Image (cartoon, rainbow, N blue to C red; front, side, top):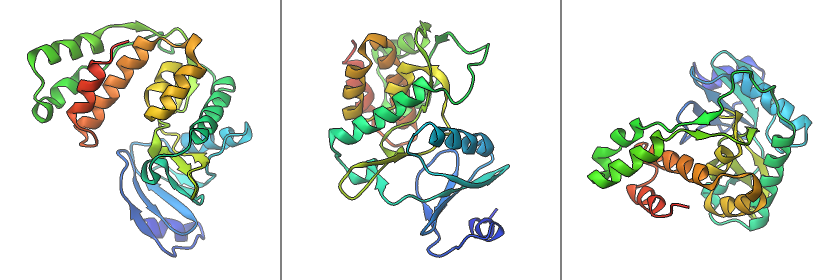
Amino acid sequence: MDAADLLRRHGLPTVGLEPVAGGTVNRTWRTEGHVVRIGDAADHAREAALARHARRIGLATPRAVAHGASYSIWERLPGTSAAVFGPVPDATWDRLLDDLERLHRHPLEARPVDAPTTWRGRTEWVDRTQERACWTAAERSSLLRILDAERPLRHPAFVHGDAYGGNVLVDGKGCYVAVLDWGCAGWSALEAECARLEDPALVLGLERWASDLDLSLVWAMRLELLLEVTHLGRADAGAVRRALDEAP
């Protein structure tokens, strides 16, 4: 499927069409006014619906223009991702947390009757990163013990689930514009929201939601995330080792 053909099919201009690096589920292109995401693994209709509902409750997020079984087209808001911009003011992260908090108060979907009540990490990430990281026997033992422990989800919440810097749009001064990408959104726990935040946002989130958080669960979920991004080559094993040393 061709991004230019999709744009033309929906009567949208193709001026400036170029691929966008990154992403693990979709291939992405952008023009001056739109973003095209193509991928068979994503539920494009659901993501478009979630974004529409999120906008209705006041979240800053792009509008879905069109979607099909394996693609979606979104308006392109002006700005750049916080991950590309670099350090941004704390006020930016506070605005993001305001939006996430609004989402938690106004779930976009009903909680499933079979929603999980416990969390257990994916131990396979330890094996998948072994060659790259050269884990010692002691490190492997610690990682497997942490990920394989079943932990209760005491504060279920409807979360965005992937509000890291790459999915946070900022303007030329680093001020908050919008949160992007609804592919990971759903019912989980407040700890899952925190685990994906950038470090400065996490500090603010831990302060804001302190009474509702199990810090050991945040830490375990963050370790799992770091193992995953190490496997993808987007972080080095040092980040995992530092997190291991920061047990709450």
